[in-house]
Length: 347
Image 1 (cartoon, rainbow, N blue to C red):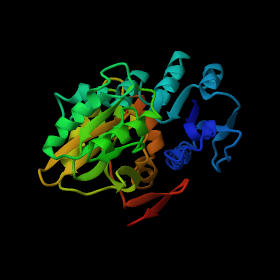
Image 2 (cartoon, helix red, strand yellow):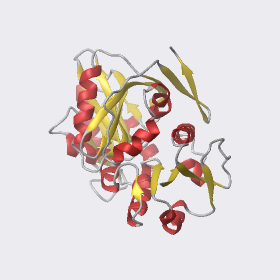
Image 3 (cartoon, rainbow, N blue to C red):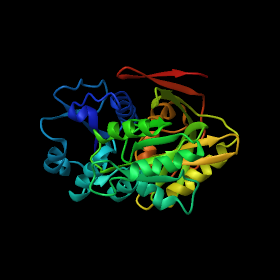
Image 4 (cartoon, rainbow, N blue to C red):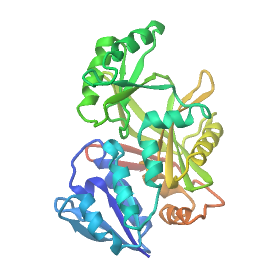
């Protein structure tokens, strides 16, 4: 099988710090795991060639246009791309339209999980997802005055509010605000880099930020690990710094079971996926934050300690086969340092 793998920043020459370090690390790990297959990966003219057995293919034009012209030369494709502005959805759609097998979630599943408000609507009556509302930007033609009215009524409870892009990636653009002025400033900030006419707002929940990594065959899902997320709050802006795999917590089993049920409830999700959560230790509650219908940064650490080749397991899961036994040997810490993702073995 002739497999094409691409990571958005490497394939386009993007220098966006919000995902370049993680994207490159995920690509390298995946190519290493698939070294026994006939694997190709895309690079731009500005990208450095990775020291892997995968064959680099140079892209000299818009990535979407390149895929339309060339993707049929491959049997299957595994895309790594950000959700913002529907990038992952649009690229997945092109692969599907050309009749090539996607080694991951369908474009419909990606679309649903890309928009966090739509994800909330799909899950709110079934799972403990954080209450989410969308607020249109001030200059939008739709409901233009509701931003202040919502926030003023919300502040009566004395609660902090999380304001974020509805289609953001990682913690990019996510802010915690405590006043109407901060709320409006956050909206203005988000409006500059999203194509949607609205942002979303959620109650701020104090707890432990985690994710669950899973493999899914489109019907059944298997949790692989609970992962700690190192989240910092600087001047109201939330920043993702790295994490630990695996993470032990009294709510571990509950969190992984909820994540499994959530993934199985959404049609079209396949391969490696992740569910972001907050563990509220005071109330013993698990709160779903969002779903990532794609490879996440935890893959970089998990592949080093799991008892099978994780890249090969992704291929098998898309074909319907899930692992029977999962063992994690050791613990990995990873953290962002500039444009690099550093990895250290803890035990």
